[in-house]
Image (cartoon, rainbow, N blue to C red; front, top):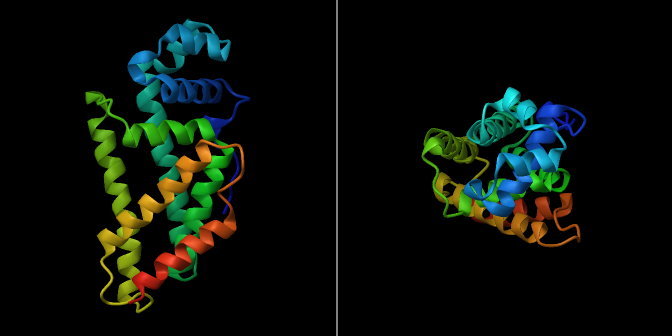
Length: 201
């Protein structure tokens, strides 16, 4: 599975510069607290250049969310196709998420604030519905584990996935508030191992 820098996060290209700077600003100030002037100053690019790529601030924001979701779904599907156990696939998903947070903390903070913040943006309603639908993919993976006998028949896929996501978010938020590296492969394995005990009953 490749973990090469996707084009939209590559600081060496124009779109990548805009995405990374905008994600950091939106995470710091929220959508309504950021101006195109600030994005221009943070990137060192002219406002006409930014308008050329995204049209306006809403275009940057929606493109940032949509492109990131599509990137993550591709990585998720790569893991799903691996010929290994469901448990190992889930471990790989956690390792992937941890790697992304360490590699792109500004984007991680943007998404944490997007999912937990109080700022409601009408133009994001469809994208947020898509994000919630994709959360169900984890429940489907757990359900597959129940059907093939890897998890106990009493496991509840939707509840298990919510507990799992909550646990991962807890450690991601801790990581975003410290310079110490918390999100390790060992932690990923320990979290899944612990939750696996409950799923296996």
